[in-house]
Image 1: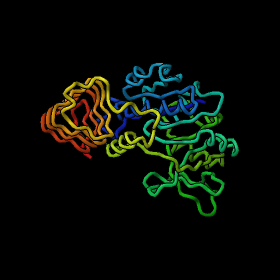
Image 2: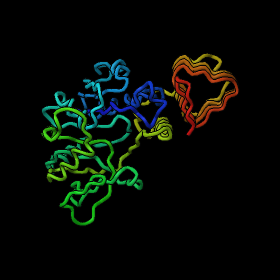
Image 3: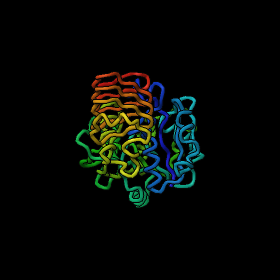
Image 4: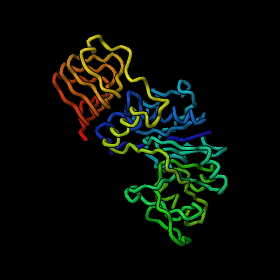
Length: 328
């Protein structure tokens, strides 16, 4: 199976954390979010991926390279200027020809039966199948209205003229299955927003756009609060159970025994922790961090190379290696 991961965005809602790093590369339990996604796709049977890049592209390319170390083949589609979702997909067309392919946002954590989505898609002869969810906050995300046959009849504020009866209100999950033939509907080059230009066009032309409804696990990492929440979920092994690294690194200094650890925690390599500190629960400490005596750390994320001074208390915070602290 093939998939395209959308990772070209600027990550504006996570600034300043994303000023110097792509959003999909922010660390969760000492591992980039994108690595969790790639691991999950590999386990689901995906062999070939294409990732579109724009903001700090070399950080992703240097980390994953050709993907072989992660059990997949990775191609990259570099966007000198952001092309939008549809423009980015069209620019990667050479990698996507020949068979159905998934398009997946890079800032989500989810569980999905991909084979069932494919079966649903083929049964309905769909051009695009959007994976959608019923959610109490659906209005905040934008309403995708589907009829009794799961055909999309409303996308955000755009309704097709054929809709009848009561539509089920759903929200888009950031995952969709594409028939490569639909790329004929995309402009050949330049910026194109799939939400504003492609989906409304499919509705207007009465082309088969369907919604596959799932209520399996799903979280988006749209802001610092959700970033911390997702880390808590991963440390608790509620998601990505088979891809979470060991709870603590291998090179902890002997003085670590003078402090108390309250799991679950993730502690990186070469971390130094002073005496009389309480570490955890729900804390990730990056590589090469120094925690001085008498500190209390919980419900937070420390990136690599952070020093915490004596008797500090850090809760519900993200401390990046730009030394910024975001309290949630």
